Picture 1 (cartoon, rainbow, N blue to C red):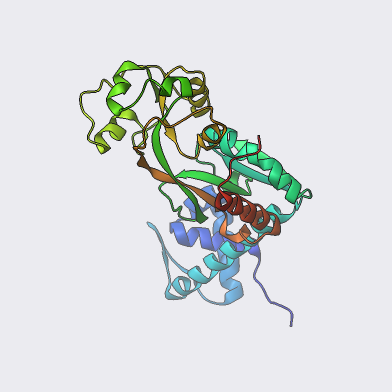
Picture 2: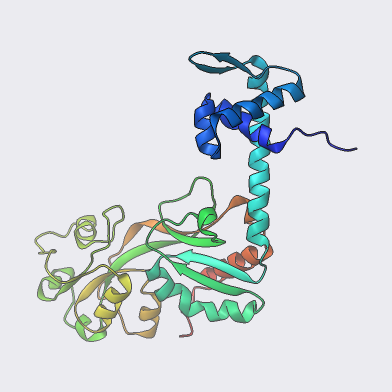
Length: 302
């Protein structure tokens, strides 16, 4: 049976005007004139045969019919937008765009990506690193790995792995450290990008373990965690290592843990994607590989 639908422009005009209770604000949203919105609404009212607004000198108010009509139309327009967005995201089955913090990408993800490329040669990964929170829909990103407390409203989010923090340094420097008090004799390396929301700075780590009397402000700082790890490997000092970011260096022996004391980082890594695209084959393939890699727990082959 053929559907008898009102014009989409008339539906959009009414839905926007009803949300704003204003033809002028609806016109701003739709990039048309207020008179065009008014005319489209009038057309819709003629088609459905009922008044949708009560028009007054000082503004608009929805009629009872308009109030019943609005949520159904909003739901329908949202469904159209989501279906179109999912179709656009899934239109290219070969390319998978993934976003992640630069530090996580450089120190954990990129060394492991050859494993995914070998397992799924039909998918080309495009890695977009950013230190800001990426809007997956607006930026055309298929999936991401976020670092934070999670979960994330409006996204399909799964915890990928937790993280702990602990001192690490080059083996030669570790020979000078037998107890935490010995930190007073060596340079401390600082993660200058730490915001204080997560426990990975020297003061919060020391406080968590009841360590007092240490000068924890001295030493160089780095705004890039990759450079921080490289400085520690080069024997510049002791850094407070994040377990995920130093995993490969520990496995290779270029960094070691002089003490066993560790603290939870207060944040985790989360796999995120849009709810409407979470089941796309290319996204599921990458998601399953990512979680399998974490479960395997092995360092990269690099």
